[in-house]
Length: 215
Ligand code: SAH
Image (cartoon, rainbow, N blue to C red):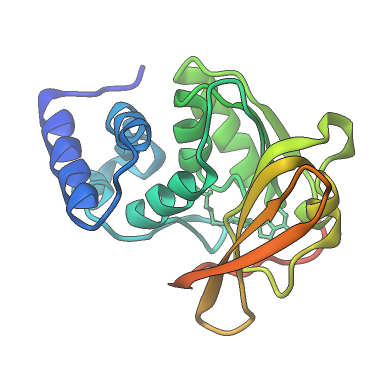
């Protein structure tokens, strides 16, 4: 069973206050992040780190995104209950759980088998239902398309065409793009006629989006 003590809750509340101070204003985002026990996504030795505003290693050479980054990307999506959302890079499953707590119908793709399996267990344990897929996010997922929202949580070398195709008219997509150490966050919106617009949203750091499934 997942332990979520008063101490965990206290540390989490402080983190949420810090995110609000850093400019996160969407109450639904803050509420969802206050609900999800982030320490459960890290090794039990790292409870303290789970509630600091930092990225952290989760195995297979990957990281759980920094809380501010999770909050920022989620806020940019303007999540509504019942939205069908596609996430690329399930990783620990933390971002996925935040979206699920906001009432999203989630499809999430991960290319590292070890992480895909771990995330499945914890999302189940939290009592959520998501379509988790072990595969290559560059292709998106046709089966559940189109999506109201798309979120990419790894640094993409370019905007994958398939992901834009699978976005609904009126949809929003948030994706960090850039091949070096730093990525530019890009918000992509598609209007009712299917016209696509891009807006730059600042610099962030992500692990790279890589082609094909890892073995
Ligand atoms: N959203 C995650 C962040 C994990 S880091 C969380 O909340 O923990 C980004 C993840 O993207 C890594 O686990 C990495 O393996 C995965 N990834 C990289 N390239 C990918 C691709 N082409 N398709 C799917 N996942 C990918």
